[in-house]
Image 1 (cartoon, protein in one colour):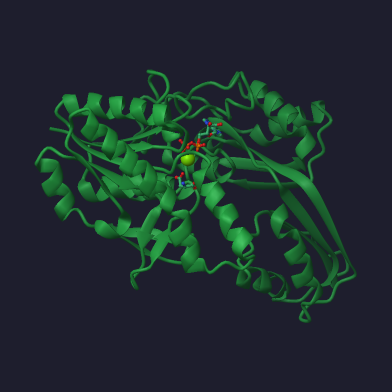
Image 2 (cartoon, rainbow, N blue to C red):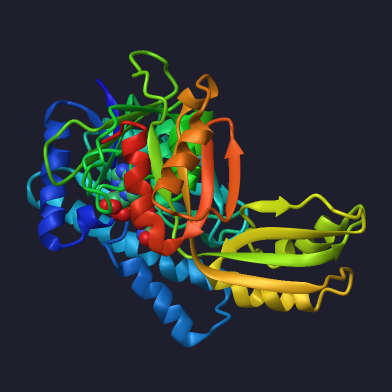
Length: 403
Ligand code: ADP
Ligand code: ASP
Ligand code: MG
């Protein structure tokens, strides 16, 4: 008998009709005599509505109450799924995070799952029941409700798979797998049959929303293979794995892009040891995520220019923090908005020369100006104007034979 974890995303449970369809998928697995555990997100749009409500109450809404509020959508969808399964003749019940419990570490809204209580769960599954577990939420050491980051039901599914020792973990979503780039943005995107954790982690972190980055990291650390499938159409999906069997020799596996990036340049900064740390310390204290960082080589050994990127929504706060930072001196500040990061990702680039050149040449052929570049072993990212993202994805997709 196999233990199978099935996770359904927001669109998959987005309406009563969708919930009825999802119950048919669950019934299909159950009839094959599997041990089933279901994890569900909130119905699509619900979490955003709850977040908006918190903003109407206060622009500094209490962090613990925020998690208590925004995690409620999952309780609704789980109760509806369990209710429907009972209606069609199965034994089923909902389970919230504190009832299991799903214990977390770390800050509110960005907690990480450290353990899942499986004793009662196993008893229930062994008695023929189908547990429906709230994704996204957990509880802290002091018994407050936490959430594990936006799109966090993916992480709940992976960590449940770890603790329940699942044979399979299937992420059901609204696309039939991981594509070479977002299929809703570029219609020549192709489905990827198998992708390495590291590639998926880069793609997810660099803007491919299909999997939550933390969940891919959890899967990699715990060696849990993930299948990504559609709850809308019956088609083979994508396997996310660490196993090296039957991989294609594609150099670039996928292309990701972000929205709403902003760039800050501090010109004529007094160059001394510790200056970068002095700039970034207040940003870190204010939980502002810094992404790409470039420091120019100082021409005269005294002054340098430092450029970095953040999300546009943090721009005003960052400007304020730099202006009131007494520990640095500089000549000029400049800001740019409406920027995007476009990245090519693939383990094949480690062993293939010329990838950087081909990327830059392709972008140049479309007259796309590159503002900042950053690289790692398996990815190259460029910061460009958001207006050029579509063109950039198309030309790179073609250049690296992904069309
Ligand atoms: P769910 O609600 O099921 O968790 P998400 O909205 O989080 O679904 O993720 C699915 C979406 O991810 C798709 O609708 C698609 O537009 C987007 N997406 C972005 N990049 C990719 C990609 N490379 N492959 C597939 N989907 C992608
Ligand atoms: N409902 C949560 C969100 O919208 C978690 C999830 O969908 O996985 O972020
Ligand atoms: Mg998702």
